[in-house]
Image (cartoon, rainbow over all chains, first blue to last red; front, side):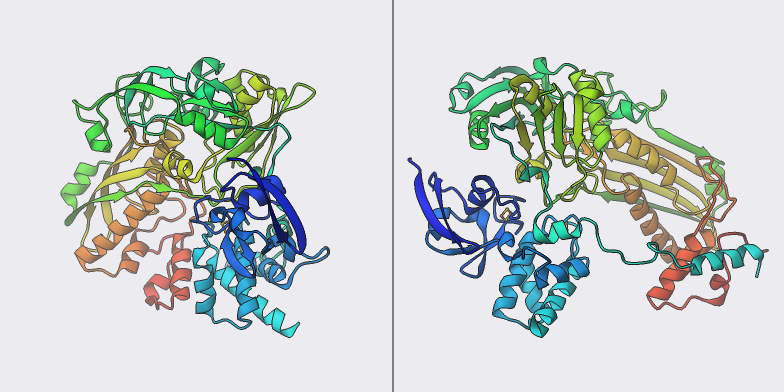
Length: 158
Length: 455
Ligand code: FES
Ligand code: FES
């Protein structure tokens, strides 16, 4: 089947990519656009490392054919990282040591971003539910929960 | 207070710049911004992808491999078989002074586990490489397989190793042995004989980032290898030996590992990816799929441990006999070394005057086991501590008490002929009791590791 052009908004910028049918958003981000903050732990929906925001909702980019999000708004970790310094969620993750090998961090941070945008003051249980699809194999879940709570505080006082 | 003790306490109260402080992580900013570069984030123009043709059976003879259909796949570049590998043998054991090495880089005429690599296919894209792999026709003759360590040691078991046994030979012996005192005499004197068998399962490390490398030819004739190995120089040495090139031909770049836990020390992707880069003159990426990571990457070995302890009414363990079997899977990797560590530790951090240990490194048709967090020792600790609880329960003693009574102290002789120095078991147990809010009786609190109380 021939390739076709798909246009969408990525981190506030309109982009067009030429893709074969069923090419995933993950492949487009990582291999076509060389935006590698979005990770690739399993490519089968099992790890959460590829999470991005589509219209503000966390989605697994490895399961998402890019054609399905034509014309929509995609935000990746690159999109929330300021030129200088860190986003308050990133700062909270850094300060609370919620990172070990760091491979799960981009996905987890995007999930927390979506959660706090929707629910600025989540309970611990709500945070746990939000990250239920994110595997941290270094098992740093406790610091991740602390970082998310800290991020909520920072964003509210900002 | 003795002068030594007050010196220790002074030292403990000293303020340091880093020790005892939380310091910001050097790599933390990269991790939270996604700017840290992991191996799979690296790509080069013209980069090829490598995928393995793997055995679909647990044990068999390779009669023929037909690549003719695979070669027709658009994007196919070339195939590598055992004939292309200069020294077709992993050299992990010879580099840690154990040996013999027996695992081929690519299978020659026999496969010993499901998933064993038979040939490598290099293609323009990952999809093309996978497609070509799926079109390779394997003609294999299936042989009986064995999956249990004790089954593997029975006389009628299929023999997996060229030296004619399903166990590793330690200096002429069928297992790693420890002999200390006289266990039979100990059992004869004991008030109780307490026996149990402990089993542990294989465990997959399952790092979130799968095993991967990129090998790139450089204009000066060298090869740069970007890898997520946990053992950079060890891997470089292995690669140089397998490819029969001087170390100076290789430049290994690593240090960023998306989770390893021991699962990334086996030197599995780098030699073949570098060979592919040599044969094609182009950068080559070899990244495990999640399925490969789970199915064929090494695991922690499974163990079976038979305990027989002779115990006195007052709680002293006076004899311990352990027969243990490690399931190395189809090949050695790091298991012979794990078994040696196991034999040195299976008596536990306890002083027992009579000890007898036989620890076997056994081959089966499972995927090879290898390193993982304290490999050899962690399963031993699991068994030993379950056994301590069982002893406490059997003789009706408090589980803390039984451990304090038997804890090793400075100056004690270990069964493998090492004198204990810097023991801290008693101190650690006291600290642990405090942390969990358990009140220890006075006579235990008075004990310490640096001497024995007078009887
Ligand atoms: S890579 Fe998408 S869920 Fe694992
Ligand atoms: S920090 Fe390693 S997987 Fe979470």
